Length: 135
View (tube, rainbow, N blue to C red):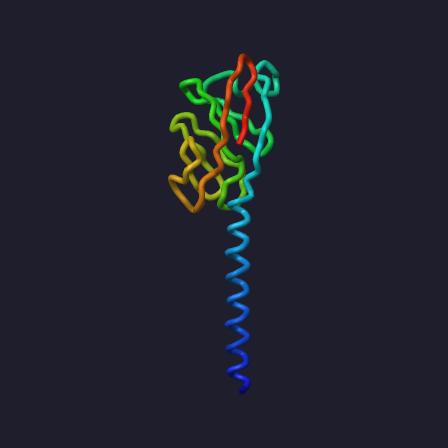
């Protein structure tokens, strides 16, 4: 094997390792949406954002929002593209990442990239003034 063949082989190997590393990182990031089980007391001042339709808050790495119709929805807080916290846009009943422009439906599905995978959706159950979020 001469020097040129050796360098070509090393270059190809480095490219393959880099590609595998990048793909592995993307997979880990997209699946890094934990299971949750917590309850929010809606009478607490710390949860006052949910007192009115269109409000939202972050809790336990989850964004919980109250839609304009008064129902509660929750998805993973971190955008699946780069991990930046998404915000709730009540006018369109959707989630949006201000960092790179990814948009998600109220159920967490990607409606506009660069994010390639959905936000994990959680179940909200209202009982009196307690909102239980699980998933």
